Image (cartoon, rainbow, N blue to C red; front, side, top):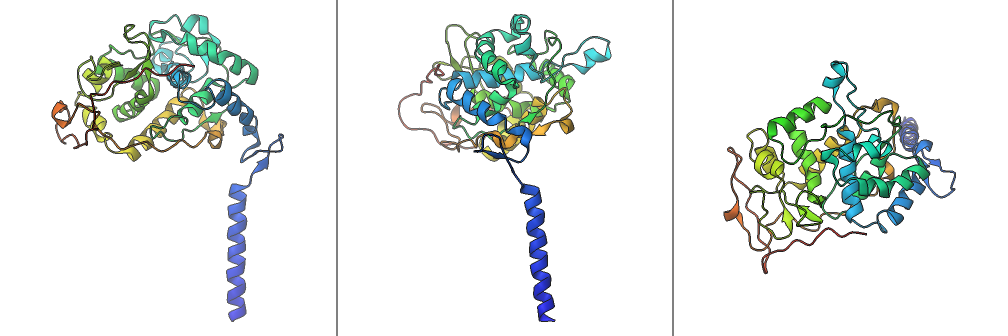
Length: 338
């Protein structure tokens, strides 16, 4: 009886091990160095190494990373099922049309300035025949801001024509316009829109206010002029989404909850990056995305500001109490270029 019991345990352990092995079995890539869970992902190793070294300056979180993330959004949001329902071409979503039809789409008002990153990415896309979305996901992993490890799915059909103009929400739009645009593009909820705005923590702009080149964005509540020197607040963020009753509490809930922000941003980015595509027909190559570094600190006020400066917008919950950095009033450095 004891021998039977032992044999059963050994058999069960072996079966479990085999099952686990079947789930985690990896294939050796043609380079003889790397392995992947799906052979289709093997081609991405050389792409990742190339863009890290030659586009992102050795894996830095610089201007090209910021702009690559911006390009991901500007490309993917270019889809409107409501236009399609009216018999018009509504765009293909995350299809690379912003690079393929660069001469058309970079002339749209909302896309002002993206020609620099489309030109920078073009040689990599042409050489490797890879989606621009891969660069965005890889680049975010270089930033020490507590970013999640984003997903990447391979297998987007190439764009056949540029997405229509005015599908990208702009910084002067009101909440109604912004939420309606996201709802039309992919059924995004107000909470998902707020989650996507976490991307502004690593964003910068040259053309919103030309007097402050490479200015980072400020995410707190407040007026359009930031409380910090060399930083700007987008009207759509600070005057609209951070204050509107549909979004203010969700916005505030992420102030001191890094895990929630990471989880919500990761999920919303996956939804965004697959707009216009059938994800069931794509290959999950998310394992190729580097693991981002942990955040360098917890939420805090920069020197010179405190809870006394908060303009409370969420009616149901008080703004969290945060520590203030010591030292002189903070000045934000421009986003580093290449």
